[in-house]
Image 1 (cartoon, rainbow, N blue to C red):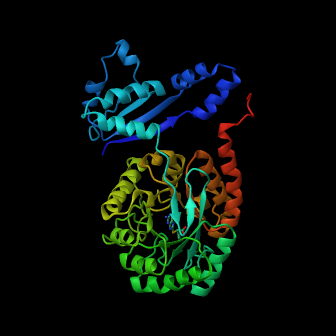
Image 2 (image 1 turned 30 degrees about the vertical axis):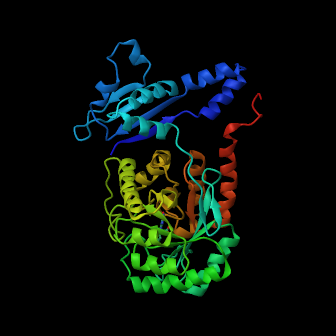
Image 3 (image 1 turned 60 degrees about the vertical axis):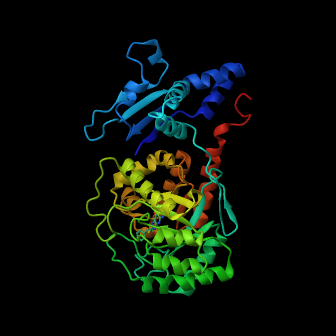
Length: 407
Ligand code: 7PM
């Protein structure tokens, strides 16, 4: 699978601000933005022959007009290359690559990663999610008896519904109702058991609110009944890798879905998580799920993707994925991320328990928002997270600077 991964890029918005501060003419500013702005893009799954098809020999003047071409030496991954250059150099490579059907695929992935198309808005239950305007909030409503004392867990339907409505008052944009504990070490439950837990909760919420409802399940049988009861989104923590009938059920209902990455099953996933390239492998897995989804007829604008923080991952894997979220942007879908009260936060704060991880959760959410990461965060503490995001999102939006900087 040919893929371009944006490793780093300086911020053209911030850069143009500085050029304005230097009092350069608009024409010079535009020229310099293209010349100075640099990006580093890792291309994987390409053909080794790209180099001779596209790049003139070393030392030639023509070669200097293209990004620096650094081929990898991995025998298992031929054709891997790191491209580094200015926007102008990338544009030149893209127009060269467009000229032949053999290299046109490279032109397309480079174009997509350097100038991503805006994500189309999603409407659920009459609410519009306009991606890129702010970070949206998904509130957690667990209906599981083995609570793991995370505070988001309610054994009976009535108290789960009351909790759900409190989350709506606190500003939740969508609720995630789950009846199958996916906690590390937990065992699967039957579809009947899961349905008995969630159906009354979905119905109870719908009687009193129009909030969009997500149901956390890996089973087609559960999803079918939940969607019949009026759920709007299916959140599959195995990213359409468990039940082959699930994608069809979502498609038939015209519902949306969130596909999450996991390595292994909850019972054993934290025993020895291993990756060669955690970002690349998470992307491959999510792309496979997306293929199942679109084959079944789910439109792309109804698919969210999630790296699955804490699911078959060490502390370092979790941190690296959060740091590199922008690479997952290359998948071209809105991203949902769940860090709330997770054990990696406990580890980072000297062994705090789930109930004591609010501040740590807010730290993770703010860091993500500023790194340019998540479109939706899945949290237990909706009111507190909403305030943290009001600030973090505002700082992020100040990127353009308006007239404040030498206007
Ligand atoms: C114990 C540990 C109980 C962890 C429950 C959990 C995610 C999710 C969960 C996530 C998406 C929790 C998790 N986490 N769905 N379901 N993304 N899409 O914190 O990160 O609730 S279960």
